[in-house]
Image (cartoon, rainbow, N blue to C red):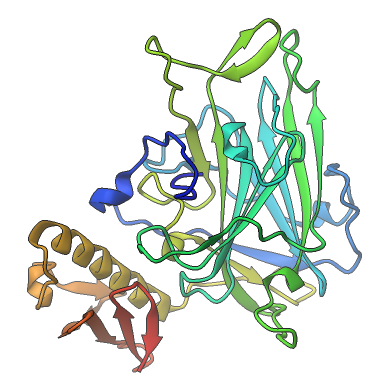
Length: 355
């Protein structure tokens, strides 16, 4: 939920992106192999569908920033067919509550579950979906991450054909009992992610960049109604952000750190290994973020790699030799992959291209 639309007046208190602070511990994206289901899944919020029994759970979610084990467990299953990307999220929660009923309102003001998808893995033109325990959705399209000043956020974009359902294992909005939690089941049509009418974008035996976030608030109960808890000064206490693939900072909007979901067409169990060139790109994004920090401090772009790092950059035992090209509107950082001999270029706006 972190760093939302600029034209909403919201008290976020989570502006780590402003200083481009980054985790000192390397962030390694998680991976998941989504199997193909031969039978369409009934979207009713019930995890007992036979197709789900054949899918593996992800690792349990962890704190977005520091890997600390969350107070309540969260896990996900994924499947796909020619029409939909299926997601099943199971959340442990002793107090299931929600009060936002209008679509495209700020759903993370309730406890929610969030889906982030970047189909072409370039950190541009990606998608976000948030749903609360009332099954109220907020879906939006972002042209770039929030770190870029010319980002456009389409809040009025809706996922055509989205199906979702919630099952509460307990009673919703009842503070007089203890719940087990809630299950969210959804089917997102591939067509929602098409860039052109004729785009054949079903990712058969390909990977997309995906991440999931769960926002959980401390609450208080007043006159039998749940609400977000406030401190002694009347300010809302900060929320918890629990994620599938770690970010290292309190910011979901760094798509280069999201997990890898591989959509296998095999009938038997399949495996997926992150390509080595992806690791090369990770290092380019590290240099890109360092350039952001350098510019913030010096009001000019660094002209050499040595201005950004004093240590050798290695991937799987191979030393990378990046270079910087400065130009009138910014810079390019180039590196030749020792694995594929492909030259990758990251621009000042964070987009990676091949040369």
